[in-house]
Figure 1 (spheres, rainbow, N blue to C red):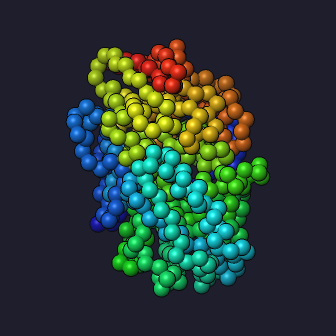
Figure 2: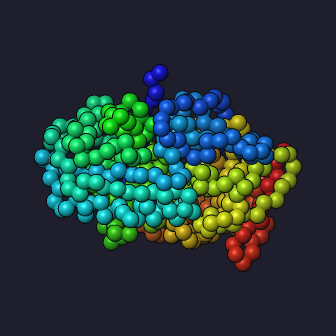
Figure 3: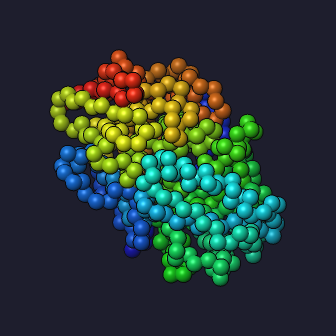
Length: 425
């Protein structure tokens, strides 16, 4: 069976979109089933729910949708819990030779990337980076001859590049020992990321070239440097890699052709420039970083109350979900400064629509803005300002009148535990 290759194209821009209009949340409805992909590893919570209570909230992946938000994540992606070994290969080219030691390039991303995943997963993902080759691996062709541009498909350029990489590295590397591959390209190959973002991930691609008996099916390529000139590169430049690795774990792009206006800075799959940020609670559940007992499902008719603690802290209830259709629903969580969330300027209850029938990069998640057209509460560079004050505070209510759903924030305690009331028909 021919399996689709998941090509993740970057449209990210290093711009603070302060004047963008909040996205109107629409209801999606289209049913189907998951696409099976064969692999030695899988992502997220792949077992059936222990009871029936959460079943209505595990909206399934939709057939034909690229990188669906549904749960469980289809097979073929890298597992996202336990120990994951990441192979890092630094490469250069005859027309773009590495100008600094290859280990300096590696140090731009580690240990920061491992620390980011440890914090975001509450220690449930042990991300182990390894670089068995400490020098630049010289590709046989000039960079220009691979024909790599933004949005380039796997065929033919990337297939040729991966084949050449395997030929050069295989005598020194046991590819079968690793769960994913990061190709860290010398930053002088290709355009500046300020002009064109080339970084890309090919995931779930079992038709990729093989080495040591395994296909390089989950591979991220990182180019240039995401340096906006603000002086924060040493602290924030690594964040392109957690974003790209999010794809090998099965997460979609949350930005669209129009930028980060759907989700803003509330998930690294939306914006990976600028200040540090975390993943949405839905993604943490999808990846297996939240346990079932940390999630409540508001599927029954009537009113229910839920107490949620900050997503930034480990333990306790974190996520409430309100299914709307078989493929969509509202997620509810508490966001406060802490953990990976550096830029939260209005703490509170974040509410967003999740749709499993929408492709990556087409808006599978959309955040509800409690203060529409306010201009936001931050002017930090590369943080989508309009949605920075999206969370709801005590006394405020989100209404989906077309579906008869109300989500009210009742109060909070001294530990930032919020009490929420959900009403549905």
